[in-house]
Length: 161
Image (cartoon, rainbow, N blue to C red):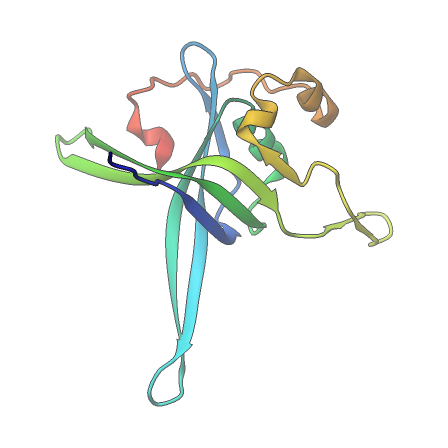
Protein backbone atom coordinates (compact mmCIF):
# COMPACT_ATOMS: atom_id res chain seq x y z
CA UNK A 1 0.00 0.00 0.00
CA UNK A 2 1.37 3.38 -0.99
CA UNK A 3 0.71 6.30 1.34
CA UNK A 4 1.39 9.87 0.36
CA UNK A 5 0.96 13.27 1.94
CA UNK A 6 0.39 16.57 0.18
CA UNK A 7 0.26 19.24 2.90
CA UNK A 8 1.54 22.81 2.93
CA UNK A 9 1.71 25.13 5.94
CA UNK A 10 2.98 28.68 5.38
CA UNK A 11 3.21 31.82 7.47
CA UNK A 12 3.95 34.94 5.47
CA UNK A 13 2.85 38.32 4.23
CA UNK A 14 0.29 38.91 1.48
CA UNK A 15 1.80 40.63 -1.57
CA UNK A 16 -1.40 42.27 -2.84
CA UNK A 17 -5.11 42.16 -2.13
CA UNK A 18 -6.70 38.89 -3.28
CA UNK A 19 -8.30 38.99 -6.70
CA UNK A 20 -11.78 37.48 -6.90
CA UNK A 21 -13.13 36.01 -10.11
CA UNK A 22 -15.90 33.58 -10.91
CA UNK A 23 -16.12 30.51 -13.10
CA UNK A 24 -18.82 30.50 -15.81
CA UNK A 25 -21.03 28.56 -13.40
CA UNK A 26 -20.59 31.28 -10.74
CA UNK A 27 -18.11 29.57 -8.40
CA UNK A 28 -15.85 32.15 -6.73
CA UNK A 29 -12.09 31.72 -6.93
CA UNK A 30 -9.57 34.03 -5.27
CA UNK A 31 -5.87 34.23 -5.99
CA UNK A 32 -3.04 36.10 -4.28
CA UNK A 33 0.67 35.83 -3.57
CA UNK A 34 2.25 35.13 -0.19
CA UNK A 35 5.86 36.00 0.68
CA UNK A 36 7.91 33.90 3.09
CA UNK A 37 11.38 35.06 4.09
CA UNK A 38 14.28 33.08 5.51
CA UNK A 39 17.16 34.89 7.17
CA UNK A 40 20.56 33.68 8.35
CA UNK A 41 24.06 34.89 9.04
CA UNK A 42 26.75 33.99 6.57
CA UNK A 43 30.30 33.03 7.51
CA UNK A 44 31.29 36.69 7.70
CA UNK A 45 28.47 37.38 10.15
CA UNK A 46 26.39 39.37 7.67
CA UNK A 47 22.64 38.95 7.79
CA UNK A 48 21.33 37.34 4.60
CA UNK A 49 17.71 37.03 3.49
CA UNK A 50 15.88 35.11 0.83
CA UNK A 51 12.19 35.64 -0.01
CA UNK A 52 10.05 33.06 -1.79
CA UNK A 53 6.73 34.00 -3.36
CA UNK A 54 3.91 31.44 -3.30
CA UNK A 55 0.78 31.55 -5.47
CA UNK A 56 -2.29 30.84 -3.35
CA UNK A 57 -5.72 29.88 -4.67
CA UNK A 58 -8.94 29.65 -2.64
CA UNK A 59 -12.32 28.46 -3.91
CA UNK A 60 -15.97 28.97 -3.03
CA UNK A 61 -16.79 30.41 0.40
CA UNK A 62 -13.15 30.61 1.41
CA UNK A 63 -12.47 32.73 -1.69
CA UNK A 64 -15.22 35.19 -0.72
CA UNK A 65 -13.98 35.41 2.86
CA UNK A 66 -10.34 35.88 1.80
CA UNK A 67 -11.32 38.79 -0.43
CA UNK A 68 -13.21 40.44 2.41
CA UNK A 69 -10.65 39.93 5.21
CA UNK A 70 -7.18 39.36 3.70
CA UNK A 71 -5.39 42.53 2.58
CA UNK A 72 -1.99 43.44 1.18
CA UNK A 73 0.72 43.23 3.85
CA UNK A 74 -1.36 41.08 6.21
CA UNK A 75 0.49 38.33 8.05
CA UNK A 76 -1.41 35.08 7.60
CA UNK A 77 -1.14 31.33 8.08
CA UNK A 78 -2.17 29.20 5.11
CA UNK A 79 -2.79 25.48 5.23
CA UNK A 80 -3.53 23.52 2.11
CA UNK A 81 -1.94 21.37 -0.55
CA UNK A 82 0.30 21.81 -3.56
CA UNK A 83 -1.32 21.73 -6.96
CA UNK A 84 0.55 21.72 -10.26
CA UNK A 85 -0.79 22.56 -13.69
CA UNK A 86 0.60 22.71 -17.22
CA UNK A 87 -0.76 24.93 -19.97
CA UNK A 88 0.20 26.85 -23.08
CA UNK A 89 0.27 30.64 -22.88
CA UNK A 90 -0.97 33.00 -25.61
CA UNK A 91 2.40 32.75 -27.38
CA UNK A 92 2.28 28.95 -27.47
CA UNK A 93 4.91 28.53 -24.73
CA UNK A 94 4.39 25.62 -22.37
CA UNK A 95 4.08 26.77 -18.73
CA UNK A 96 4.20 24.83 -15.48
CA UNK A 97 2.53 26.35 -12.40
CA UNK A 98 2.85 25.26 -8.77
CA UNK A 99 0.31 26.80 -6.42
CA UNK A 100 -1.06 26.31 -2.93
CA UNK A 101 -4.71 25.29 -2.86
CA UNK A 102 -5.84 26.79 0.45
CA UNK A 103 -8.00 24.78 2.82
CA UNK A 104 -7.49 26.86 5.95
CA UNK A 105 -6.53 30.49 6.57
CA UNK A 106 -5.69 32.16 9.85
CA UNK A 107 -5.26 35.93 10.20
CA UNK A 108 -2.27 36.60 12.45
CA UNK A 109 -2.38 40.40 12.61
CA UNK A 110 -4.18 42.08 15.48
CA UNK A 111 -7.07 44.26 14.37
CA UNK A 112 -7.05 47.91 15.43
CA UNK A 113 -10.17 49.95 15.95
CA UNK A 114 -9.97 52.88 13.51
CA UNK A 115 -11.64 55.27 15.94
CA UNK A 116 -9.54 54.79 19.09
CA UNK A 117 -6.64 52.49 18.07
CA UNK A 118 -7.62 49.72 20.52
CA UNK A 119 -6.73 46.17 19.55
CA UNK A 120 -9.76 44.01 18.82
CA UNK A 121 -10.08 40.26 18.62
CA UNK A 122 -12.41 38.98 15.93
CA UNK A 123 -14.21 35.67 16.22
CA UNK A 124 -13.78 35.23 12.47
CA UNK A 125 -9.97 35.22 12.45
CA UNK A 126 -9.79 31.50 11.65
CA UNK A 127 -11.75 30.33 8.66
CA UNK A 128 -11.64 27.12 6.67
CA UNK A 129 -12.95 25.99 3.32
CA UNK A 130 -15.14 23.36 4.95
CA UNK A 131 -16.60 25.89 7.38
CA UNK A 132 -17.82 28.28 4.72
CA UNK A 133 -18.51 26.34 1.54
CA UNK A 134 -22.25 26.59 1.99
CA UNK A 135 -22.58 29.19 4.72
CA UNK A 136 -24.66 32.14 3.56
CA UNK A 137 -24.97 33.29 7.19
CA UNK A 138 -21.25 33.99 7.52
CA UNK A 139 -21.11 35.93 4.27
CA UNK A 140 -24.09 38.04 5.30
CA UNK A 141 -22.23 39.00 8.50
CA UNK A 142 -19.39 40.44 6.43
CA UNK A 143 -21.73 42.03 3.87
CA UNK A 144 -23.57 40.85 0.84
CA UNK A 145 -21.51 38.51 -1.35
CA UNK A 146 -20.02 40.25 -4.35
CA UNK A 147 -21.68 39.82 -7.70
CA UNK A 148 -19.81 37.80 -10.30
CA UNK A 149 -18.32 40.80 -12.10
CA UNK A 150 -15.52 38.87 -13.74
CA UNK A 151 -16.56 35.60 -15.28
CA UNK A 152 -13.58 33.39 -16.01
CA UNK A 153 -12.99 30.39 -18.15
CA UNK A 154 -11.67 27.63 -15.91
CA UNK A 155 -8.90 27.02 -18.48
CA UNK A 156 -7.87 30.70 -18.44
CA UNK A 157 -4.52 30.55 -16.66
CA UNK A 158 -4.29 34.33 -16.27
CA UNK A 159 -6.45 34.17 -13.14
CA UNK A 160 -3.55 32.68 -11.24
CA UNK A 161 -0.96 35.29 -12.14
